[in-house]
Image (cartoon, rainbow, N blue to C red):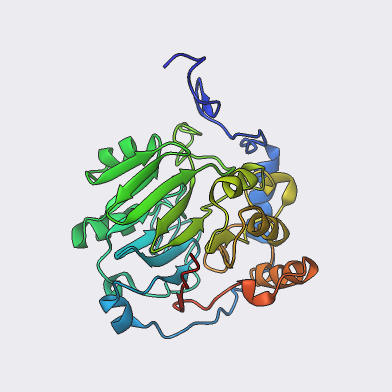
Length: 324
């Protein structure tokens, strides 16, 4: 593909965001951020938990559902498929078993108790979203289809995964009655010191059962969400990050605040949204119970009913209503 023919988010040295606002490099700001993260006072949050409906979830193939497992991990049931988003169910979001962000809450459902998984969608390659031990466990158990952004498919195949579909932004893949669209979000990629932005990042719109579910993955705020709304609104359920947003001078390009999450909810035309990406791993120095409080205030300030955009207990299953 010549330079004149390639999409604008394809760069000579990898990939880039649609609207600029690239992540900051590993400079003094990053060192200051790490120092604040290690030395700040903090308390693990007390997250509400629900008793998982294991028998129902194991048998269900008809009722569309969404169950929060923690962080950006959901079990979705759509189109007769059991789908996981960014399953990170290990004890650390880290390349090391002895260091790095530790899990503060057990998963909403233990991996051994999940129903058979048909599809996994992976938004990008960061350790809190692509957890290799979880994927290896799922491969041994179910060998699900892994749907990943452009460039990440080759990496997964190098790790021994063969059932992989790789998508560029605005491309789609059909898995039976389930249609999966990769959509642009504003973030970055890299699992080491020398592979920054070599693999693409993405959100997903999942369509089945006359429903649309938008999974934002990990993102800063940008015009990408108005673009998604122009193509897919209304969205029946949006899964939107609300945590890991401080300090703003470092995190603004890549992680939204709860107030920005409300703008995403509006931009994509969501009928309902669930706040995610908070309370499971300590990734940034804001108080860990702050995101849902700020979300409630932002929803009220936007004159949106509280039940329209909220957080949910770990392990709680939401039945999704067909609206079309």
